[in-house]
Length: 237
Ligand code: NAD
Figure 1: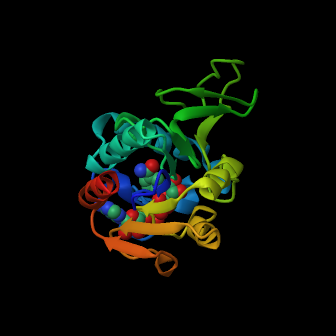
Figure 2: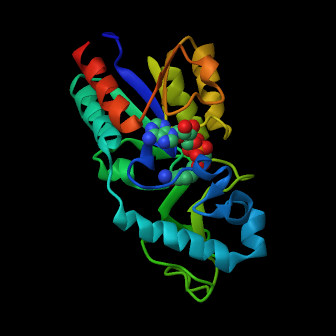
Figure 3: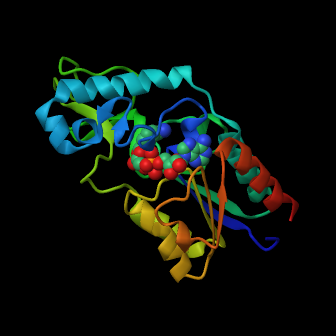
């Protein structure tokens, strides 16, 4: 792996599991005891906006009770060392938490939005906020009431930064997927894109993902244990 300078890492809910944030898969299609249809679709929001806002308020509040784990920290260390060597680590995350940032990484693409970002549908402004929003809340920019929704990409909506992500995959030497079930597209298809471009590919996951057979190598186990070992391998190669 000594020639590897440019790495794209795709992360999913599994990398934050050891920090105490539950994945989708933990409970067979439930996320923190709610059905995904209820809290992660535009239809769910239209049907019951109070429920959806309160669900994301709780997820946002939960962030202050969790800490990055050794997997997040190891990726930050890899980013720093690659930069020093003239390389680049790009973290493409499906996660809406802020644990990569708090683990020290900087080059992060949140393709499914962020819990700490809000989106006013009245003035189409996005802004950072850790506050709880309800249907009584006013947009801090345009003052419209009840129009602020979580800046989260729900099922059926277009993920963010697709062109940028594809350009990074095109330019990488190695594509690594960590803690993702490979069930949610387009993220699940990135390994096939990487293979089509003759990139090296590695998966680190607790269980084999749905697209496991596309990877050159799969390492099964906890991200908090396996990611620091893999980072050391790359840095010592
Ligand atoms: P997922 O729940 O579908 O899959 C999680 C994967 O992580 C599973 O394959 C599981 O085997 C693996 N896993 C569990 N614990 C692990 C560990 N300790 N180490 C390594 N792997 C582990 O999640 P996903 O693939 O990210 O996809 C679905 C969607 O879930 C995303 O769109 C994301 O926005 C959303 N989500 C995000 C969070 C978060 O921000 N932390 C939490 C739940 C869901």
